[in-house]
Image (spheres, rainbow, N blue to C red):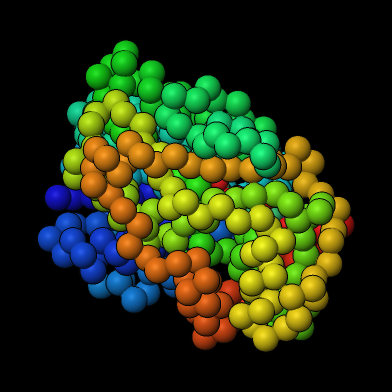
Length: 331
Ligand code: NAD
Ligand code: DAU
């Protein structure tokens, strides 16, 4: 199989490429990545001799057409992915997430190529803290932020290209990922690296917001299950029953890093901040036999903390610029 992985130098894409090289050695991987502030080719160094790397934009129609013509399957991870950035400047989100996805869809339509679209649970909006419900594939879309609105738009393009043009596509909507190689702008790496630097963790608002955490390797194993066995035109929700309030996560990071559990600060809230996400992954489990294989959140978080401690050379170059952005937002 010749596999084109867009966004393969970002957090989830990098882990996907590493996992693919390890577990699917017969697959020929080409990565297409623009190397924005969020992409780092160094993340692919351990597998550099096993893959091809092309620096370029998913909205570059000529380049995308050439690469799609030469592959059997496209997995589309590339995106602008950070909610806070989308509130500060939505335009790159529209360009990459909507126009970029459109560009790929037109190419896979021309070449009859199998396409898997990586999306987020945020397309469904949020749930009340005390609501027993979880997101299911039947739930209407109701995105809150510019980021999630552009991801919802891209999902709807995929659905339309399946129905109107017979494109061979599947979609997955996953909950919050954690693990190695995640950019220091995101919640868990930001707190770990702050603490390495002697800075107290920062919780938005009251810290009551809930996210449904999944280890990135479990997400990527589910993506492989969908590539291998997913039904064309279907949407699969990926989640590992990992609901935690942000406050609980910060307290656990503090404990695991040997600090008092209350040594954090509350900072101003994110505008429009989604309250709670929760995934019902029954369809993925029943239909495709996927199950999370990573041990519990506490062990996964401890391993992630250790990875950031051991790999300061990877995240250090991004840290000051990231914190300068947050300082401007008062967070
Ligand atoms: P990331 O920001 O870490 O990585 C994004 C990658 O895409 C980077 O390597 C960047 O250089 C590349 N990129 C950005 N614009 C591009 C363009 N125009 N052309 C080519 N490459 C471009 O993101 P991530 O957290 O790894 O997320 C990957 C995908 O998974 C996204 O589609 C995101 O919406 C989705 N997702 C993320 C999570 C999560 O918790 N992080 C959860 C569910 C879904
Ligand atoms: O649900 C999937 C989504 O998860 C993905 O689609 C996004 O790409 C990914 O970034 C993530 O979105 P969130 O907005 O949930 O992730 P973030 O890491 O930005 O924040 C997680 C929670 O932590 C959220 O409630 C905001 C809060 N937070 C974040 C930061 C950076 C804090 O309390 N303090 C912080 O310093």
